[in-house]
Length: 289
Image 1 (cartoon, rainbow, N blue to C red):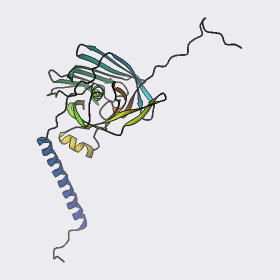
Image 2 (cartoon, rainbow, N blue to C red; image 1 turned 30 degrees about the vertical axis):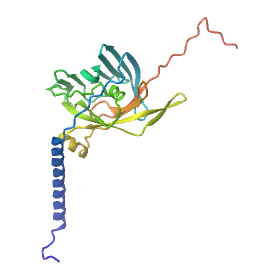
Image 3 (tube, rainbow, N blue to C red; image 1 turned 45 degrees about the horizontal axis):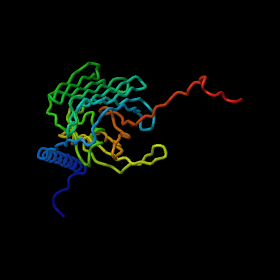
Image 4 (tube, helix red, strand yellow; image 1 turned 90 degrees about the vertical axis):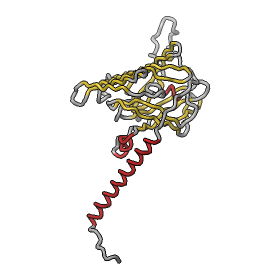
């Protein structure tokens, strides 16, 4: 046995805690060094299926199936430029309105983007605009004290910026994994990465016909020290899930995602029109008694 006296138990616990913190700091520093030496670059997505005239109907539900908003996706093309607009009108009067203008010459490239969210379903009213040509990003929001504030920043925006284009790009990707860039309003604009992988294919049906969709999983990589600490303090954004039907004419099927930072995950699905029961007319045969 050694002649050195053992440290009292509370002191040993304190030493253990200090060592653990030191190991955590070491891990963070090492990871930051790795990020600095291995910067992740996104990948532009080649145009395989050009976009055109579209007007689709959508529904927004909670994950337990409660409908909270009705949506529209409208899209028009002018030459190689496309304007796509997604809106959700909530049952409580809230509004989510997103417009993306992009080109589709060889690769998809975002030109401009505007997003508005307001109403009871959004704790913080917010409007964000992006000009990809100048790199100007503006976020106008209402803080916790009810004051209107603006965050404006000139950013170095990469060519693979995916704001408003995620579903379009996923219909055109050849394989995963891949990564795309995205500007998140936190409310300060922040450039993050969407790391995209695939999960097990999902079976669904239309009528009596069975079909199979590709299930994409998009993980938000914040980057830097904030990104490394986010999972430790519970601030890591939830993964996004998108289901795409492949084939000669790929189609969006379903998505599960949060519409704002810190918000709940909601489900976006296609909606089928419903018609009121037709009133009897003179040409309608009378029912026999």
